[in-house]
Image 1 (cartoon, rainbow, N blue to C red):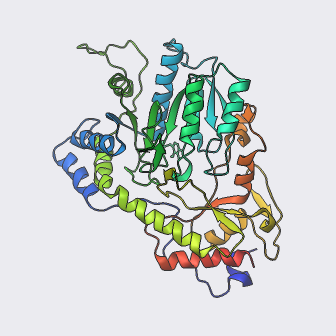
Image 2 (image 1 turned 90 degrees about the vertical axis):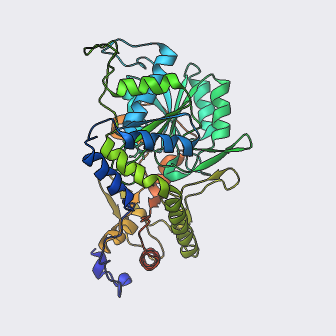
Image 3 (image 1 turned 30 degrees about the vertical axis):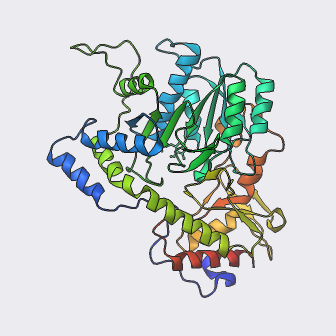
Length: 419
Ligand SMILES: Cc1ncc(COP(=O)(O)O)c(C=O)c1O
């Protein structure tokens, strides 16, 4: 059915300007820093913007070193390789550091969190999600260690800017002598109370990564950083990311290298964005709270967080439809069908309605254990919470340039889907 002619939506007009899920928000200094790099000819992977952006991020997150890289995925890859080398030794040039080893991974995340395990020839074992924060379930993690006691590495993400249960997960990791790779790509600026002290996500793992992808809370258009207190690890990542050159007059290589360093132009955008991190978080928080208030009379809940132990960055506002209000629907590999039912709806219908009115939402991350590429990997779960969240949940337009009026209309569209 064409949503625009559906009588439920009568009287609503499509937005003149598209409302995005989460688009870049520039402030002016980004241009100045990029222009300065060009004017001074530091148009390369060295320069003042990189130095300043690294320094500022390290200070904000409370770590000794931040290494600017071409993407969050690059940071995750080198973090995974560092962990692999520390645990299992240096690999042959044509072999990954995790060959023959399992790694416990968040199941409900973007595949960039876990693909580096495959790049390093390891085998991801997916750990189901808990309902309190939509992150890695400590109980499932415990169960995974019962099944695979030899595992020594955990990769976990903080979904949509909401910190996971890090105190429990850290305890479990320590009890089993396992290292943690923290994927804070979505949660830059979110805080967690660990052992009575507030810490930033991105400073909790043994290896930590953030992203400046165009849709993130602050952006460089692309880019990412590796964060650590270890000078040795920071130096190694810097070396690997610039083709693993040895300090010789010619190109001398003892290790496999990568071209993963951040560009000084990208760093100029990042540098200009950093002072606005808190302002962006405030805007995202206001969006979350307006949705929460505006949807409270519907059979839905918002993405949850632990208010005692965490302060999210509210990157994306998400909602979950109560089971009792789910319309009949089915998802194939590439599409979704549903039956219109009075008083009920489903993520597909809401997303179609938003699209019809020129607003961008998105299904929740499809869990890794449901992805064709990873379907034959082990999945440790009680009742498959990830599948349930994916079926009933969706990400709402969360752009920090969305006006109150636009958000009110989005809330109205969602209400009408339940008619
Ligand atoms: C959870 C998560 N991990 C990793 C990434 C990868 O970051 P990038 O796009 O900078 O490579 C993203 C987003 O893009 C992400 O959302």
